[in-house]
Length: 283
Ligand code: AMP
View 1 (cartoon, rainbow, N blue to C red):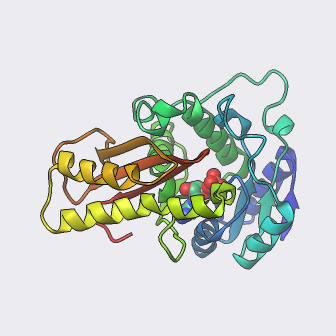
View 2: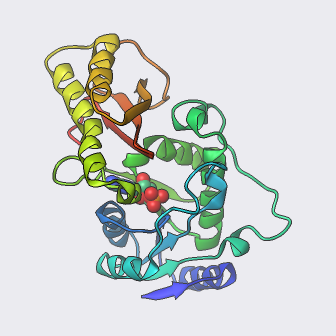
């Protein structure tokens, strides 16, 4: 496995690979890799000749009071996970190479970013779409894979790629969970032992709402009340949002169906966690 640290070298690598008729898959990450990331990589490897994983803690998607400095970083550990998952190239650029002096161009998706995480984290998606657009231009993949754990992010990136006629297939992959249901996340590393237990309220609330829906309950007000109660009972859990939305448009709805998205953002202590499910799906 090769580690490439500059934009110029990465572009040269991809240009050469494409010239030789090779297909490229890209998995963009912020590192501190876990099995969720690995599942994207394993699928990427199946879909292309060359698998590139980027590791870049992107400063432009963090707000001024967010955890950019504290975000866990461990390239040595990431290297092992990446090798095991079949990565051919890790692209790990420096922020000064991605955003050199004078940088002033941003990509922004409008309506889809107005609610959910877009409302609680102003500027977050503008940073995400800008860095993903740059990564797509640099790595020039045929296919790029993203997790449904960040459901809104996936929707926003699909929209950007479509609206901007980007010549890349965007693939969404299922959420990978710990055995007890907690969605895997690099930020889980922040949780102390008691918080780790409290964090289960997200997946528990989603599972309960799904079970009620399966038993015939379609009223969002009733389902939402149950979700709020389960999370509200947990000490140290603060709800940022618990929203029921159409999974295509992300518009709020009042009557649930199999395609309804439940999206949660909950702070446990000081750690903000997100999770989601589609009511009619297994995951
Ligand atoms: P991150 O490093 O957190 O920015 O995530 C990089 C990619 O991995 C994004 O597309 C995430 O949606 C995806 N991802 C993170 N956690 C999971 C998970 N538990 N299951 C599936 N995909 C995930």
